[in-house]
Length: 64
Image 1: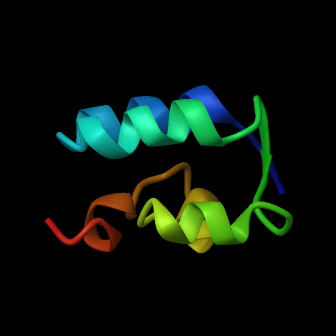
Image 2: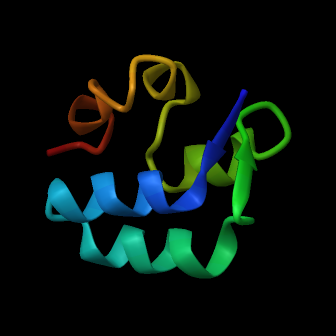
């Protein structure tokens, strides 16, 4: 699945994860492919399956 990098960054910021948002901004491509970029997403604490639901469950995967 393709998702815009900015959506991930915005959600991370929304969740108070400024460091991870900055990391995502510098490391993720503009269009994130959840299969191709699974390793990067995992390092950021983003579960690709959460992205399928519009990033709704992201907070639980960030260790908040």
